[in-house]
Length: 175
Image 1 (cartoon, one colour):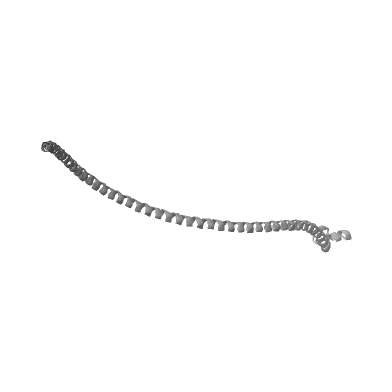
Image 2 (cartoon, one colour):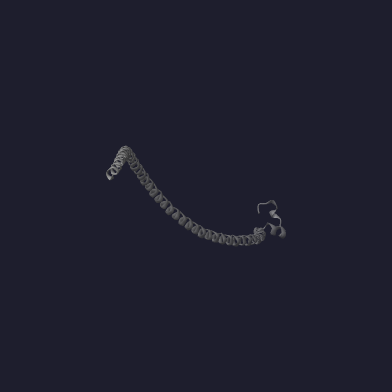
C-alpha cells in the first residue's frame, strides 16, 4: 500500500482506508457477515438434513421390520414347502413301491395265467381224448346193446314160441 502513488496523502480518513489493519478489519467484518449468513444457511440445511436423516431412520427401521417379517414369513413358507416336499417324496416312494408290487403281481399273475392256460389246454386235450374214448366205448356199448336187444328179442320170440308150444302141449296133456 505504501508503494501506491497516493500513499503520500496525509488525510487521516484516506490513510485509515489505506491502513492494513483497517482493511483487514473491514475484510474480517465482511467475512464474519458472510460466515454468519453461511452459518444460518448451513443451520437451516443441517436442520433440514437432520429431519431427512430422522425420516430415513424411520424408513430404515420400517424396512428392517418388513425384512424381518418377510424373513419370518419366508422361513415359514420354506418350512411348509419342505414339509410338502417330504410328504410328496414319501408318497412318491410309496407309489414306486406300489408300482413295483403291482408290476411283480402282474408278472406273477401273467405267469400263473400262462401256466393255467397250459394246464387247461392239456386238460382240454385229455378231455377231448377221453371224450373220444368214451364216444367209442358208447358206440361199442350201443352196438352191444343193439346186439343184446336183438338177442333178447330172439330169445323172447323163442320163449313166446316155446310158451305157445307149451300151452298147446298143456292142452294136449289135459285131455
